[in-house]
Length: 177
Image (tube, rainbow, N blue to C red):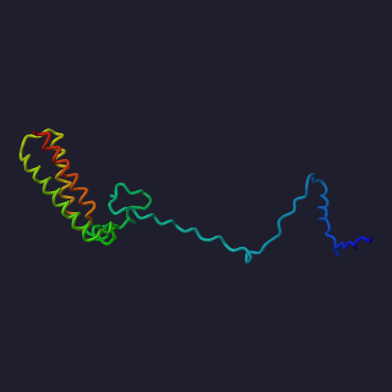
């Protein structure tokens, strides 16, 4: 039996090793320092200009005294409260989508809770209240007011506030009996 021939590929040109560094000038010890190749200014693009960072927008409800002192006071635009209210009104609010049956149920529950809270507060009348009881009464009245305002736009939050007002007014009525 004869072995098959082996084919070996030999490159035509073998890579050469790097050339040795140039000899040191007289009186210099150590490796030779070669300067980098000179490049023309036309080949190197200039660095991009630095851009000033714009301050992030603050919450409209944040007051000027709590804003970071990044910008000079003269640069801050003066915003009237009416303009802030218009801006806040133009921002769309996320809310839960309710079916007609759910909407009627929420409205009935809000009405019942607010009626109950108002009855409890009228039962208390002008009685002498402790500091804690006065706090409960003012919180209940605040929740009633907020629930009535939000009833037009956010039934879920209005219902929660009405329930809180009802619970606080019941606790206050029970503490007086």
